[in-house]
Amino acid sequence: MQEFEFYLPTKIYFGEGVIKKAGQEARRFGQRALVVTGKSSAKKTGALQKVEISLKEAGVEMVLFEGVEPNPSLKTAESGAELAKEKRCQVVIGLGGGSPMDAAKAVAVLSTNPAPADQYLGRNRVKEPPLPIIEIPTTAGTGSEVTPYAVLTEIKKEGSRKKILTDHLIFPKVALVDPELTLSLPGSITADTGVDALSHAIEGYIANNSQPISDLLALKAIKLLVHHLPKVMDNPEDIKARSYVLYASLLAGMVIAQTGTILVHGMGYRITSDFGLPHGRANGLLLPWVCEFNLTERYDKFALLAESLGEEVKNLSKEEAAKKAIRGIQRLLRELGMPENLKDRKIKEETIREFAEEIMQDERKLANNPRRATLEDIIKIYKRALRGEIS
Ligand code: NAD
Image (cartoon, rainbow, N blue to C red; front, side, top):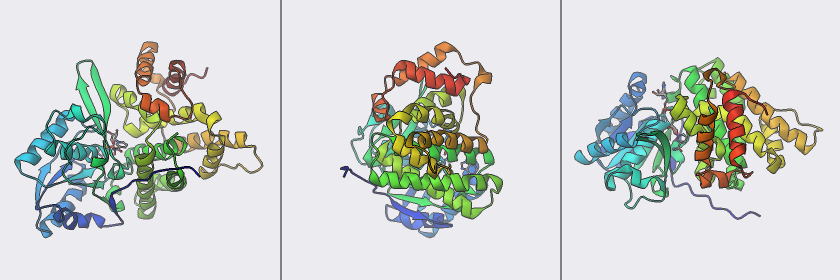
């Protein structure tokens, strides 16, 4: 059997109302907590107030760092860490979608390691253990509550780039995964973030770094998303369906924590930073085409994937069944109202080439992709996803 390693040092609480455990969990680490959150949703939905009350009851003082922007910048993380140090915070709580959760991880790092933040981008560059991190997701989603990644935007004169800080030291100590917090998500964010979770599960399942336990989690996550995401879109108040979607996103986060992602994520970052598409929607544009490109290397897995996506595969050859997985993914994306391409934007040939050339520098993503991609392959995939061109 395949040799593998599975590491997940996060204590997970899942269920309606578990946000109330914020105080008791934070208290284990100290008496002053920095709560990192976005611009307004946590306040509007009452999630922030719930954390505040829980901290107060446990005798923990709350210091608030709010206003984290989508796709948070390194500068934002540095500002958060300045506040944490000034107020002598002993634990950092990320409350929100992937953006505030990732910012919280970087703030925790910079509270115990000197700025600037860019020196920690890449793999295992953090020297001192960060402040303990507690994550409370309000999107379903990124799975950041159980991953060792923080995705941060580096803003330079030549443009913004999304970069990853990867380190086992930033695995959250605690994840409070509370489906009630996702009830307020509007349809478009539910769909975008749900597609992100789907992409994590599929990418992790076919990645070269996939392994037996993560495969189990990935197939389960896919089945749950196929079944429950459309239900949530039809009835946003369906707490049962919301719970399953959030659970699926948690499982998919556990998957990529072990396997990493493949070309979908690598290629999606520039679509977000240059065209402003939300992270999950950018992944949705690329997902069918990256999968199709990898089909020949993973007939067995794609055939199982087709089944998990609810496709009829009885009496089909392995190759035919595998192809149905692509159809299943497209069907779900359409049902969720995802765009099929960006051809209205008239994206130029040279822009696509520039994006593709950048991917060729990312050896880690190329190596984790089942089929080795050339520059021309990447250009072809971008053309399909962005301009709807079938060559
Ligand atoms: P996000 O955190 O940027 O939030 C998107 C929007 O949703 C915001 O406007 C926010 O205010 C709103 N929102 C959040 N929760 C809400 C709620 N309950 N009700 C109403 N509105 C709500 O989006 P995201 O997709 O969760 O996170 C994307 C970020 O996460 C990207 O930077 C991406 O690269 C990163 N990411 C990180 C990991 C990881 O492992 N660390 C994995 C995948 C993605």
